[in-house]
Image 1 (cartoon, rainbow over the protein chains, first blue to last red):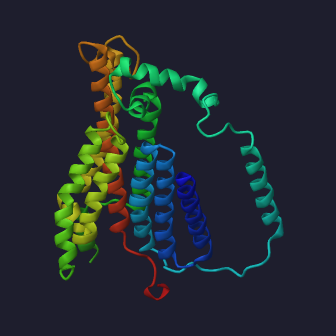
Image 2 (cartoon, helix red, strand yellow):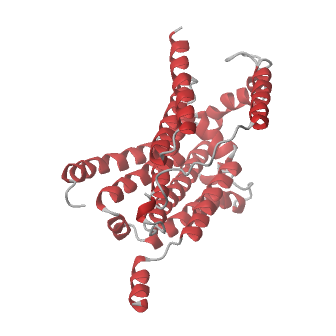
Length: 187
Length: 145
């Protein structure tokens, strides 16, 4: 019962934060609310016992991406430019139909924590059994991430590297000393 | 920047604990939640806090741009290099069994090194992206604020 109340409160605030982000035009407030949204999502992951995911969500979503958004905000205006609103019925109907279809789809999902759910009947159990004898590492998530699925994680690390290089290429990453020299040359 | 006395003192007090916590998350990822990715982000956040309080120039003084770029590359190379060791030992790519005398210790070593590579790449990338954003001059007029 207590868990249901916690879930309801967290989901309620999650929806409120999303609605507030939609309505507000002050981008600073929107950035802060987006950080709050991530923190609420992280709390929900904790109630699902997914601590590794919650940790990542809190560190990346609520922490560093809020800072990076603020950094981007310093380069642009603080107020969102609002366009003249007009009623858009077709997009509204599209959203409602898609949302209804998604909710209808959840009726076929197995109950939360059910032992015969597909996620528990395939490789999941095997990982849980084999991790300790294979690697001697108590945290199965780490073992799956770095050893059993090492290729995926190598790919993810390369994606981060390439993404960072792309951002640096777009924004420019000149060495401070070189830039001063350039400025002096131009002067 | 010189008038935020409380911020400056508190930031300096917090910084060692943030970095220590990042290292804990890095090396303790085998036993509890966490790992290279989260540790890298927390490590970067420590330096971002330093830059927010003391200015980006101070950050680039202790972490010059070439160091950040080298870190980004070194992490990926450490990860892929750990995988290549297995290849040279006649095993498959990213097979850590041969890294130590018995396969379980090999796995522990492999996961430790691989997570360290992830951590270094993530920490350098996040810090570098922050520096790139923070040192860019705004193109926008003051009136648009």
